Image (cartoon, rainbow, N blue to C red; front, side, top):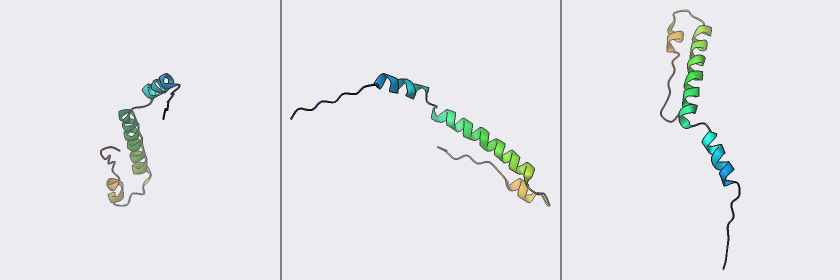
Length: 64
């Protein structure tokens, strides 16, 4: 039983993978956007005693 396998375009695939964003890049974008969103939420929340405003916090978990 003879079989063969041919893969075409592997060089292109490697180039695209090299250009793809790394996990660290994605984590940085998520951190930045989450920080901005937290700040905006704190600005927009109604303030009576300030408890709700202070309770809005950013928390990033390991691995995103």
